[in-house]
Length: 497
Image 1 (cartoon, rainbow, N blue to C red):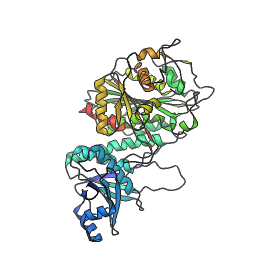
Image 2: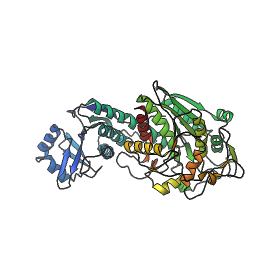
Image 3: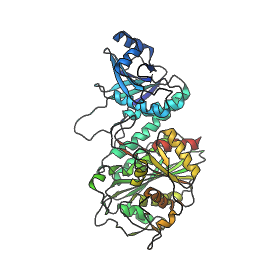
Image 4: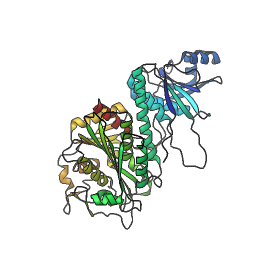
């Protein structure tokens, strides 16, 4: 299964003499745009070719300081500028990430293929350089359509101007590793479900860490049955493609903190016997975005050599209706022995997650963090761009939110209601899988909480931001977004430091 195709990224103190296009920034007002990061030789070439100052050229071309607004300026046959808005004031890392992504995507619309472009945005701080590297690479990402036609990539190489400071270049390299992980998660999410199913996803996960310091274990349906993973087996029972459980382990010498990551890996969700409407099914290949996030992030954490122990679990299943599918009112014995009355076969994610969470507890981590496209209710509450954050410790929730802000993932805290346990009582089992319809995201989290014992735990519901159906924007492409990957890496970095 191929890895995402990204351009190479190199770093230079100043812009190279030969490049196919140069990305520069624009600040100021519409009447008086100010160019940022323009190499002197480029400014001179533009003015010579067009016979007027660069500021007048940008104004005439309609260049804007609106963050992410792009304008291609061609001056003669050898000079091409991509002017991108950075805002009227000093840009934040989030704005730089957006701007770099938009500019690189605009460069990709040029008629040539195999371009080498230079990104020169005059960044001098490490956080800013990291954001530019992330935005530039992710702006270049695209999912290659499955086609009989050759479709070469427009951009082959990116040079980022870092000014020659070691700490700035080090941060940019960190950003490149983050972007690579985000792109991998996007690639897995974008694959069609006939190609990415539990067995092939597990194989891809093994291949992904083949040359890394991450060890991997895969449980097939026989091993799952022997160990008692009732939730994963029930959800996957309706498909001829049997479920899997992937376990990654990264244990560097000197690590003082152990994080367990658990990601939902439903490779396609039809709703099972509680089948979804057809229009609601077309994007359900993205229901494994949580698993993609934790697997991609773990590999990146190892590649960066962060001194934090990480164990990641990815329960993988395909939720389909058939004569072997699990039913509403079935009682399922979960990993560890807790019994659950299934209330809705389209609430399958919490069942596979409960099994994996219960297993993760046995590793005795300092923190359990799970990622799942869990509920439509979270989208009703927060919209399609913001993930919900819930947990059993307010300080930990705040810590994850701080990591998300630094990483550029939009997240917002939600509560787990007092007394939620009483709403999950069953008359025929230990628990019922769903609570009240109103506040569904909150009660879904409350259900998961039953399986983390007394360990510190945070839950990310990424149902909204995991998949983008609209047009590309900034560093986001259409389709899989790689939501939460950067947050997980940033959080691990904070523990490692």
